[in-house]
Image 1 (cartoon, one colour):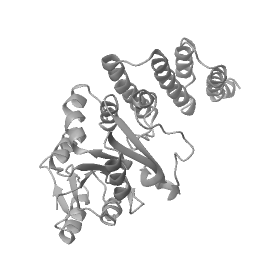
Image 2 (image 1 turned 90 degrees about the vertical axis):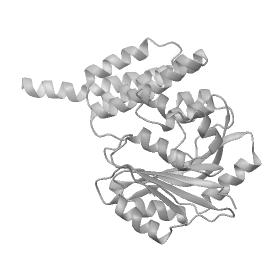
Image 3 (image 1 turned 90 degrees about the horizontal axis):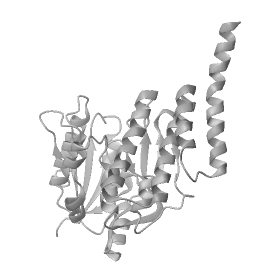
Image 4 (image 1 turned 120 degrees about the horizontal axis):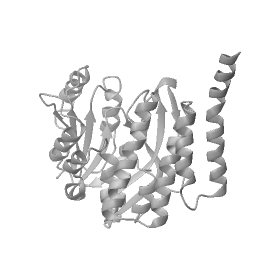
Length: 318
């Protein structure tokens, strides 16, 4: 019987979490065979040793790859995809996990019933590492679109990688790591989903099947202002590339601009940088068709960002 799903797992310094990650995949209850492709990117910690231990107990289910040097996320991911031989590919990083043992079964059933859909994703939990706390079904009350979602996805990336299942032939056609590298993108997942969405339909299961782990000072949750700003700018760079090359409505383009400067304004407020907040507010003010209630919010963020600055000046004068 041919492999129905290849579960593609990327690891790097995940020794604390890789057992939970892999066990959540091994615990999947399916009516079809699946394999697990793990590409470790030359982790300096004990991740690979733990992976070898788990593979020794599951030699027929886990294929383990480790390069001779650190390849970086794009090349490592490219090689992992090349090792996948299932009809579908499920994505998972070594610090995340699937809390629902029927995750794969539900998503395969969905795609087989909906052959026009290129991929499917689902709701998810957060696990906040420094609090040891689960936040259940984070996007329960959000209206997640399904079908032709390209323009909605441009406005906001609502697809969590650990929730996805994609047809392998779709990935071979659209998942272009050489493009991501040539454009100096800092991520592969968001441009991957946009590349698929601009041509094909994407489905959504309104149920929480996966858990995304929030770590201190991770790529998407950096601690310093400079790192956080660079992450926000990297998302905007991906959006700008797709808008420039594939277009979108003027309304969506304006929404992308507003969302970008809004995020930067909130960052400036959070990190107490009033002069930058003023700059980002000016960018927002120059945009057209901003709702009045949003404009009021931006003024408040700007005003509150100055309070610590004014207090410090008053204290120094005294």
